[in-house]
Length: 275
Image 1 (cartoon, rainbow, N blue to C red):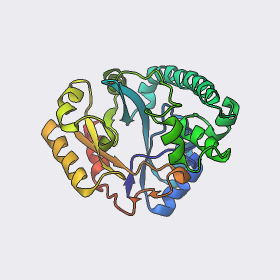
Image 2: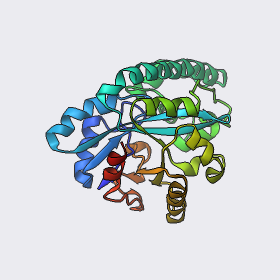
Image 3: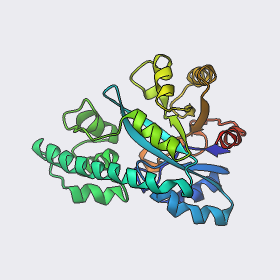
Image 4: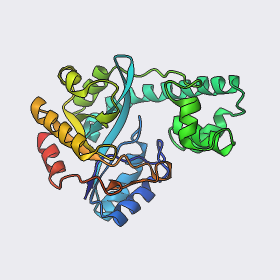
């Protein structure tokens, strides 16, 4: 079984890298991609453990980018040690922008009467603190009753507590991935606020060379649509559950939501051949 989209405590997942590998073994996942947000820390910690266990571990990352004023997530795959020096330096700048946003987010939430501190949020964040960790803190303190309410009331782009973060342009992020020898894949296209079919030519020109057709949020009809678009535009196909652990308990590693995810067995072979 293949799952190329998962997160650890290095970003916004609840499983440590070791726990994630253990879960992969239990779930029958033989090829796993760790795609933490703006960091390779989870992958770095998991790699020696994967080598010991025989798990095929794919180096990945998920980047938040800007496209026409909206946040769009971009997955990068098959980045190798020989090409990562410059890329790691570049994502260091992204990590700094995330920390700066968190400072402003705390200030904004305190303006709204919420008694929270950055240190409290970071205690939930592990390696890379983000909005899901603020959501957990708001639930813990009783300001909201659920993670969804935390986003709806305070943290979503349209919510009263939202603050912007400096994100790279989509084309810049795609180019960095491609320059590092990797595959740049549009993450969960169903979440895109624009017509995917209409903008794919522009994304292709900007450096995109893959699309995440298989994802826990996609219905069979949507998966088929993205597969057709991939063929039409000469794009590679990626797929994964977007596993986060307890934050999204309905999403299972390898099989997605309710067993709906079925990544083809030859998908990784086709990606590696393209690389």
